[in-house]
Amino acid sequence: MKIGKEEVKYIAHLARLEFDDVEVEKFTTQLNDILLYMEKLNEVDTKDVPPMSHAIRLENAFREDVVQPSLPPEDSLANAPKRQDGFFLVPKVLE
Amino acid sequence: MNLYSLTIHELKAKIAAGDVTAKRIVEEFYRRIEEVEGKVHAFITLMKEEALSQAEKIDGEIKQGKLKELSGIPLALKDILCTRGVKTTCGSKMLADFVPPYDATVVEKLREAGAVFLGKTNMDEFAMGSSNETSYFGITKNPWDLSRTPGGSSGGSAAAVAADECAAALGSDTGGSIRQPAALCGVVGMKPTYGRVSRYGLVAFASSLDQVGPFTKDVEDCALLLEVISGYDPKESTSVPVPVPRYREFLGRDIAGWQVGVPKEYFGAGLDKDVEEAIQRAMVTLEGLGVKLVPLSLPHTEYCIAVYYIIAPAEASSNLARYDGVKYGFRAGESRDLLQMYKRTRSAGFGAEVKRRIMLGTYVLSAGYYDAYYKKASQVRMLIKRDFDAAFEKCPVLLTPTSPTPAFKIGEKTDDPLKMYLSDIFTISANLAGIPGISIPCGYTKEGLPVGLQFLAPPFEEGRLLQIAYAYEKASPIPKRRPKL
Image (tube, rainbow over all chains, first blue to last red; front, side, top):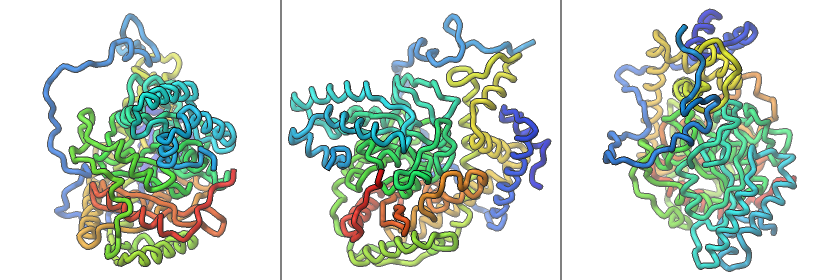
C-alpha cells in the first residue's frame, strides 16, 4: 500500500475537497494503483540529471511598465456567485 | 458537393469568386448541424444568432472589397477557449454559467481574420480525459460509429470537423488531446511547439504542457490556420518571439531523400493489428516518395505515462486551486464558514476524474513526497527530451502511430483510469519534450474506423511536419471516405 484511507482524507483536506466513505474507499484503491504504476520511474538512473521544468528555455519576459486598460469593476464582478456594494461576498472567515 | 463538406481553401475560393456569401455558408452549416448534432452531440453551446450577424457583417466587408484570410469561414472552438460574452464551460459544472469578459488571443486573431464562430465544442472536463466521457454536458459520439468515443479531450472539435458541422476547429493538447481525437475521427490535427501559439485565454490545465492547435479536413487548411493563430503574444509570458513562417509555402515541396526516424518503442505490444498495418502501408507510400526510413530508439518512451501523470496532475492541482466559489463559477449553498464553502463548492463542482487528478497532484507535491515523485518525474522528463534531441540529430522528422487503437467503445475504459491513461501512450512524449506533432488520416481498420499517422519534429519545425504530411496526403492511394450519418 502506497497510501491509506487516513492519508487520502488528509490529502483531500489539503486540496479543499471532501469525500464520503464510499468515495474514500474508491479513491484509495485507484490512487494506490496509479502510484504503484509510478514506481516504474525508480528503474531509471537520474543521478546528475537536472530536472526539466519547462519545454522551451526562456529568459524572463519583461515589458515596459506602461499603464494599460484593465477590466472595469462591473465586468470583474459580473461572474461572482455573490456580491455586495462592489465587493465579492464570502461567508465569514473569523469566528 | 454540399458547402459543408468543403475545406477552408475550397470555401475561400468560392467566396473570393463571389459564388457564395458568408451568410449562405453559415446557414448551410446550421442546416447540417440540425441534421446530425442530435446523433453526434459535438457542441455544448451553439452561437447561431452571433454567427449570422457576424456573417452579414463580413458580407458587407467583402462587398467593399475587404477580403481577409478567413472571411466568412465557419469555425468551432473547444469550450476551453475564452469567448467574450459567450459561455465558456470547460466541460465542467464548475464553469457551467461562466461568461468570460474577454477573448482568448487565438479567438481574437481568428475574429480579426474574418472567421465566423458557429459554437463551442464539447470536451472532457477541464481537458482531463481521452474520450469526452468526463464532460458534465454529456458524451460526444464518434461520427464513424455512434457507439464509440471520438477520443479526447478535444473530442467535440474532432467530431464536429469529421461530421461536417464546421469547416475546421480549434482544440488544445496537453498530452494528445488534439492528435488522439483527430486520429480517432479521421481528421488532421496539430499540436504546435510549446510557445508557438498563445495560451492567453485558454483555461489552464497543465501550464508547462498545454498548447492550442487546429483540427482541419486537410493539411493545407492546417497550414493556413496555423499561420493565423501563431505568434508572440505580450500577454502570454511563455509564448516565444520566433517569427511565423508562411506555412503554406512548405506545401508541395519535395521530401525525396529525407531520413524519417521510426522509433521501435512505438510499435510494440498493445498496438492494434489493423492500426499497425495501416501505418506500414503509409511507410511504403512514403518510401515511394523517396523517403528513407531509419529505425531508431527513444529508450525512455516506456516512462512517458508515469512522468506525465505526475507532472500534469501536479500542475493541475495548482491551477485548479482558483476554483473556490468566490470570483466566478459555481458556489455550493449556504456554508457556516469560508473553509466549508471551499470544500463544498469544489466537491460538488468538480467531477470524479478532475478530483482524482487534483488528489494525485496534491499528493505528489505534498511534503515528504515531492522528491520521490515530482522531482524524479522532472528528471526523467529531461531524459525523454534528450532522447528526442539525439533522434533529431539523425532525422529531421519521426513517424509513429498516433494512437495504439482505433476509436474505442463508450464505457469501455471508464472504470479503469490507468487503462484510459494508456490510450495517450504515443502522444504524451511530444508534450513532455515541447515539440510539435501532427496526426493525419492514413487509412481504415477492417471495421471501417479511421487510423491516424503521427509525425514529430524539433521545436518550431512545424513547416517540416506540414511538408511531409502534405506529400503523404497527396500520394496516398487510399480513397477518402466520409462517415455515414
